[in-house]
Length: 228
Ligand SMILES: C[S@@+](CC[C@H](N)C(=O)[O-])C[C@H]1O[C@@H](n2cnc3c(N)ncnc32)[C@H](O)[C@@H]1O
Image (cartoon, rainbow, N blue to C red; front, side):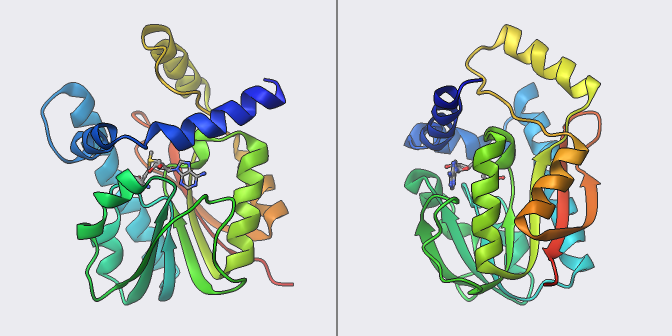
């Protein structure tokens, strides 16, 4: 893939969620409906939330947390159930518009429209960052920029999802791409790639958890800021 193709994918990922109708259907897909696609999204969303809860409890996440990309607020209720103060951020105001009611007003401190690679936040200004479902849509170079921003802003923990490469999921993705070319490009990463990216950005991996092994290639990585 050329540099300009990679840049196009970053733009496509950012623009895809800017329409109100798309944002509504994204939210509806993981919340209700009995179509096969919705059922799969609901199962995966439930498993994602369980994996995020385990990560939060494992590190006893407290204090200030950035939920990016917050999307339509999938993690709003979960994060609000912990003693944290939440900043929710996303590049799409339309997605964020549907997230606003999902957070406990007592727990939310701000909603920010921004690019994860250019956070309008001071260095070391937050305890932790949760990043669900962004890295798999972005090429490795852009992920590096985002992780560097996360490291600049976070003092303690990062909980981040990746799509982990495996022969089974590569086959599934090739099949999905064949029957639906509107599917955006996927950027799965090998386990060693995930480990290197996080290490280079200044994070130490605590645990990698699979979300739903056969149905989804997604994993939730819990990491802490490296000492020194
Ligand atoms: C698949 S959704 C995930 C949202 C939410 N975390 C969830 O699991 O439902 C991807 C989100 O990433 C946002 N996004 C795309 N590119 C972004 C960027 N460069 N910086 C911040 N948000 C971005 C989109 O607007 C969209 O809301």
